[in-house]
Length: 329
Ligand code: SF4
Image (cartoon, rainbow, N blue to C red; front, side, top):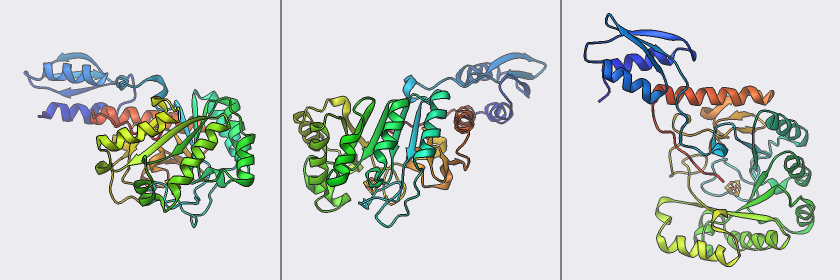
């Protein structure tokens, strides 16, 4: 049960900048509770005298995250929002009718330069379908020159001039993450459209044949994750020589077009800084939703990254809740 003194601490300490102190009234039996709360939340219990506990605000303890998953380590860039598909769970509400809303090569160059200077260690390019952009090869090269880059795609457009564009892309520091939801066409085509599984599968084989590092990601509903389905999916990718660490299975998020899935909010989601043409967002699954908008100002990027880190620390400080890690890649 949350006691009254904990509520007082959350309210009083949550308003403080790091390093400042505040006193809250405590009862004779509250000292252990206050000490335990301070230890758990990264604050310092300075003293308990005359019915007042004095607490200095500290940094909330870091969640149990590897360095590459800490807020600010990854940068997601929505290159565009239009797509050749209109998947029924698309968190970005992408379709052939969605306005492009592209970031453009010049802004992407600047963002990646600033990201590298701000301590970002990885870039993810997503959409929409990035391969609809005629200069995607230049975008991918500009990113991969500065930071290890992963390019998310449905893998269906590797033909004609777009295949030529794929071939011009760097192999160094660039991973292609291709979406494939199931080992056989039925489930994938049910969500993404008839014939899409075969073209995605062909795209995976093309990318491998062209010498790219390929990761495959499945998006699945809660009732689609049976052991037999999982085994068949991994078996198919094993046969292609794709290592298990490059076989990603993630749940559908209740965002965008989806009418079922995991509920994700800024308060419960570990942020991954995400930039679109409209602004900087908390996480890639919320990049088309105002509740996850952090700022409309793309530059300087370091300001937005710092804001997200501070807000994340503040949420954890105030709620002491375990934030949720949601893998998009
Ligand atoms: S989920 Fe991906 S492939 Fe499907 S509509 Fe959205 S952006 Fe396009």
